[in-house]
Image 1 (cartoon, rainbow, N blue to C red):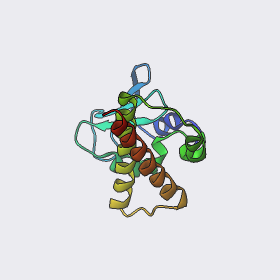
Image 2 (image 1 turned 135 degrees about the vertical axis):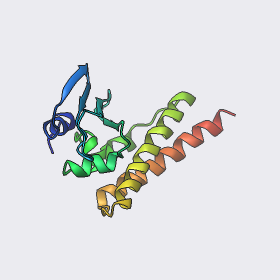
Image 3 (image 1 turned 90 degrees about the vertical axis):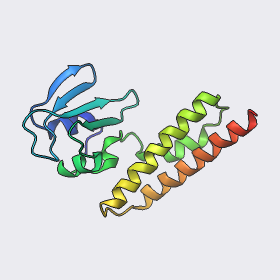
Length: 146
């Protein structure tokens, strides 16, 4: 997978059409799509968001492309595990909630991987532990604000 996940994903899709900055449509590879029903968006942080309007799940889509859910994330430093622990700052409540929401997505993606029988490696388990740590930290911040 390249350093820019969006280019790799777009190159594997058919009938890709750019509809806005950082937004595309294409045929969904997870079902017999005759009209583009897949929406693709690159988030500000480099994550790739996929939505099939016919109802296919992200795990099904990336599997059909020969990829995994982790390929939807930028590869700057796989999961940025070491870097995240060195950053200590006080979170505002809004940031704490956004952090929890983000980490919940990470956990859900790993659950989806497990549901399709994909094993988790050492880096995956380290990222799950980091998600647990970040959620705990966000909860502590929320408790302090009472």
